[in-house]
Length: 482
Image 1 (cartoon, rainbow, N blue to C red):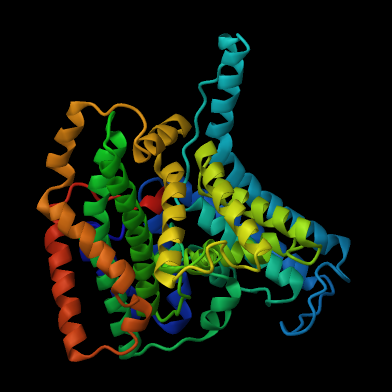
Image 2: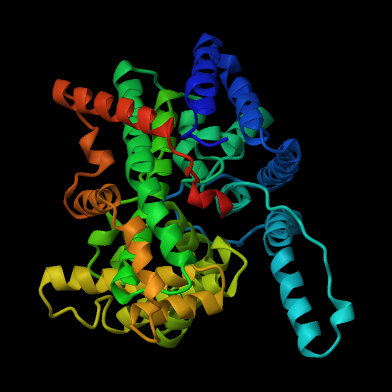
């Protein structure tokens, strides 16, 4: 079930909110958990069974870590990760990490492994050894495994108290607003809210604004840009301008698609009384790749920093190790997005520039240029990397890059594409997306105070989005597949 659907907007959400606010305080977490499992299992109930198993394992591991003569410390004290822990506590942490990574690894990378083994068998002349097995990727498994795993790690480190109530923990893991596409919510960010939170008209109104603006981003900007992208990347031949137009449209599509989902998730959280952290901060206004990753998918980049980069040593073990750590984290971050060599290359490009900028004191090699040029060059690097992220395979990505560089002959049939991708509607949306990207206010800041004029604009955008939604056939959420 996607947020930008009539089923969710007109049936599931109103029913969920009605039941939630009618339920007494002590029963809200149980109800919210049940609602979230219905939401998650709508497409395939077996996905809910898998999430329940992962939740139960981490809940038990958290209790073992907390109850084995373990004293909870305040977060500001030195962590001393692993110091003074018993074998039982360490075993519980290992069990939590291994179970989550095993689930993620099996469902996300089984097909990738089979494809590579089949390619190897064919290359060696043993086609009879090829496998035909396939598994279905559960929605959002990358998000909820990271979220659940961070809980046991934080309990082990002494940064969080273990939850005694399984219902509260299951509610934390499964909350439907951010379940299938983030943001990745740290337990520490909602621990106090699980115990007590406020419900106000102002908070609910801001939540409605977040949902409305997120829906507008998705329906009015991301989806039309996605049609440009679909035509460009499926074309056998493409002109240079068309190729750049297509990949820039993809940059807008993935940004407005994912930031729209994050906005709607944050808004739904507010409507339920929760305050989730910001996940995007105008990333295409970044002046370097380092700054880009402070602004893009903030919950993932901070998770990778705190649970992978720093445990690997961060920048504490010398320059060479720092560069290796940065590259390794980004390569693994690429693989997290999907089981494909394209994602590895995408992560490698970002990792290489992060390492290069660290060598230059966290500044790009083009630091001396005026700010508009720094922003433009950073965006250009991101665009090139997006080619690998969007293309179906490596040959397709290299072919598309060739189109961008003007390599190879262009068939006269390429001119026919112009009749589709340069329609006034698509061109208008493209430039509107560019204006919002570099000139528009962030939803997070714009909704802090909702005036009468803002409320009117929000209502207009909501009604327009619902009207367009009724006519759109192309309405995917990109990050559902990750």
